[in-house]
Image 1: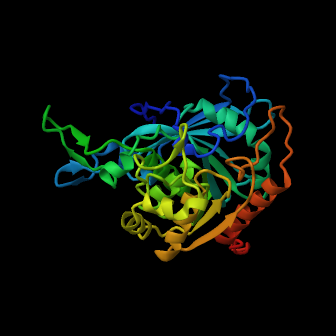
Image 2: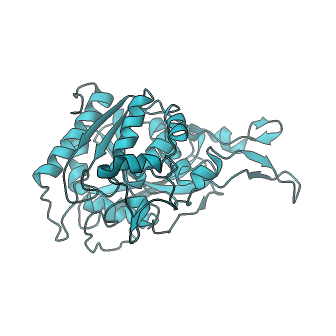
Image 3: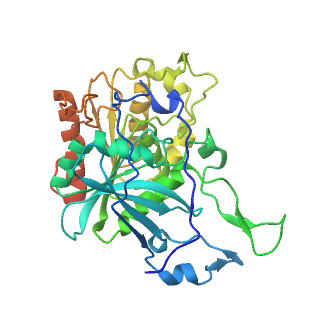
Length: 374
């Protein structure tokens, strides 16, 4: 196995604004998790050595980006805090050749298994955030692994405010006309949505994953990342839970009402919410999406109107979309977290919500589930 020596690790550490996360930015109370520097095993994976050692293919003389299936990555097996279990910390190479972290757990055996990528908010905490997440979500992930799923949780670089709208697309490589020589540069900065695409595509080519049975669920800003990433790549199914799609829909933030730092786009003011969104641009973006999406709403969320309009316009645009909502006090109710004292006691609504989106995954990734309740 060849060593890959030139990888660089650049991880975002910006705390997301509350408008990117919706109600109660702290989506569930956190409990202190001990920090460990322990690494049980480490390996470097170079799927296609020639893709790294040979000159990159060119278009008009400019080197092209390396396909995800050929990109090298690192795997560090680490203990889950306060647990006898471990998880694999993947550092995967993104399109602009930095590494971003993704935690992975899998069932016993070689597979291939269906896989689900989890995300909630994100954009801060680097790879150490995954230690805490894998502890806090351990009982929920246990259920998913027992159900036969590979489960991944990704953390991406910090969001660039309005970055997705600034260029409405992915960067491409151009000649460096300033310093000359063989260097190339990117036409725009890479975004967290680019990281999300890399994670999906990485899961699709892992040897123990069934590539055509990869799903994802994103809460809040991670829900918006699903819709942004799905404009450029396709996977089997996604769940947009309380998706903060204010950027994708080009919400006029200067005119939008706020309470403190919170953006107020409530369903009770649906016509006002629509007036702040760019319908033509949003529908045009939605029409580029091929991935089926289940939208999960929450009636008391300050972004409840945004959730509903995104579903309605998705249906109008012809996207394979479904809708469910649950009246729960916590933003991020779709995920089952440990309590601050370490206990695991999901309430009945949380259990219903979890059953709903897992059933949706079963339907699309295994062909055994039923349609969500409209």
